[in-house]
Image (cartoon, rainbow, N blue to C red):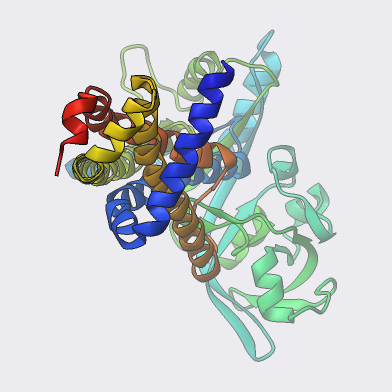
Length: 417
């Protein structure tokens, strides 16, 4: 064991000396490995970032919420006319659903809340924000919402039933209109009416980059009814009881909605129950595409790098044939020669791996600085994977020439010119 460790240390020193003497050759030989490690590391960081961003977004949307709507979240293609012609959802349907939930023993559903959305401009003085998501809902919205408050409160049932001109602002809207000054008690202009600000949501972030939870305001549903005469499209957000099985809860909700909408047995559903899992169908192709592209680039770069390292190692064996013969004549065992050239190949690959990881880390830092919302998570396990891939590549590419060197006949090697 001690002899093997001594041989290993000697092989390491010889490998480092060869890399020092042939710096340019070692650097060019490691180029393929560098590209491969950069590709596999950035691919892993991107996929992990997508997963984390997706998970965080679902938490903000509410993983224990089912959405009863006229249209499905998935693409409907040419069937959009059929969905458009469905009977409209009514905001009072939530009251009927809540009555059914309360009368159902062991119900898996807690509460239903109607939500109507509009896109409007909100102004304060000479400042305005366009394309703001305006949500009209009831006071029970606090039962299903995941948001917390930076300031103030949500509106009460009295304010909602009376249609008071009160509003709760999203974080970005409050920042844009009031620029660091507390907006509580101030007025904003919405739908040609002055609304008193009673609360501000804490920062929540965006959902998969599609829309921001901070670019919204929430007002009482009756207030929206008084100020907006356009066609309504109501959605009902239904919260599940803690620990409820989502599939069973969806079946229960389907039956309850059919009762509310007066559908007879055998009639097709004229509504959709949407859930957050549907977004996975849209995310998975993106992740698979990133993985496929990354693996292709990684495999191609590592293959080219391995061929280059194998070729250079063969050249090194040929150049140092007399050295090998001398070492064998002095009593060096074949395993020492094999270990020496294997370590040289692995050292070049590790050099490429370290440089590749440094470049990948730098690229991620630049991306984070220029595109803060870009999903990328760089972890220690990705570093270990990159180094592991480098070592395996070095072993695979260096074994054949190392084996050839170890099998050389000492007498013939000494006579080599």
